[in-house]
Image 1 (cartoon, helix red, strand yellow):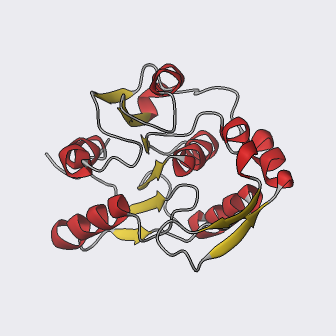
Image 2 (image 1 turned 135 degrees about the vertical axis):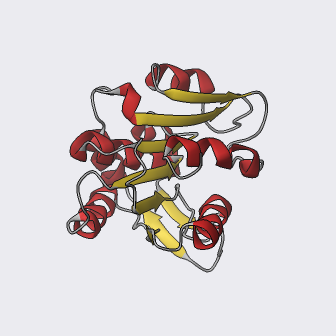
Image 3 (image 1 turned 90 degrees about the vertical axis):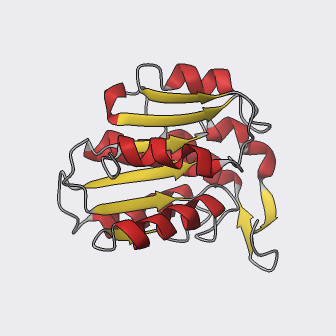
Length: 197
């Protein structure tokens, strides 16, 4: 990564929001150390197709070669789609590798993780959208930084490890899906993005 990065997109996971602990910790660091950097962490719609359209619209005016994307869980899947499409660097945090398979059981009424009053419906058609979006492979592993927790209780760390083989990887003994110890991994993320020496 070069030090020219001045735009950063954060994509939250399924049922999550911009109130994600990891997003807020990262944003707080940037406000203190890189207030010039443009930060965007949108609330993503339930529809993957609509989520990717929202992301594409938001990135349309961003300068090529000067932005990166970070994504957690399902957001890691979306970040991979963005990186494969636009060629930008990406950091993935316990990324969903096959969300069409994993979220098929979640079809129906859902509530937001950070706000139980935030209700949405995850449709069977959304599973099809995820399947259609899935990149066949990671074309340039060096484009990716990955934080993968062996203690992830939701996703299989072996799958994540294999999917992002060749990336700059931090394989964590223990931890959990939400990376509740994210403060320990924040320097890795920032160094990969060239935001910390």
